Length: 142
Image 1: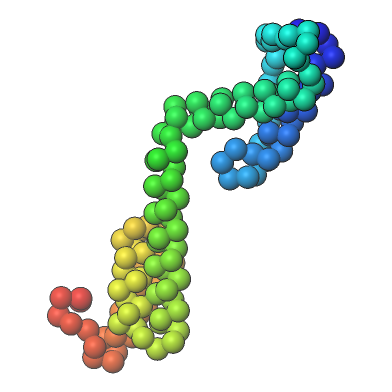
Image 2: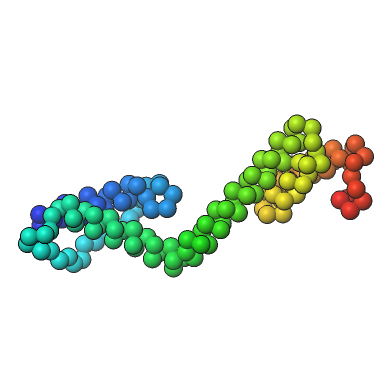
């Protein structure tokens, strides 16, 4: 491959790394090696090699994601994270607006999804204490 196309390849790789692949965040600490390349004396251009390098980077990122669990697994985890954050946020909002029963439902869901997050379980404990103090706790909730 003629050396005149190497800057196009480098530009495509750098631009792909700057844009990121999944979250839109730049990728850092990545080593890329140009091993082989074909060209056509009439149809080849630096711009074509830039696009090809970018597509190659995206293809490689997809292969790595597939090897580590794929888009479906990542999308499911992201959706679950959003759901538990939404449950927690709604629970806090309801608790602050004076609806501890509604807050307890949402905070219980959030705490069940992420029992390792102590602030979720602490918030649920506080709301349940409020319900007990008001005498609004059903026997199955104690």
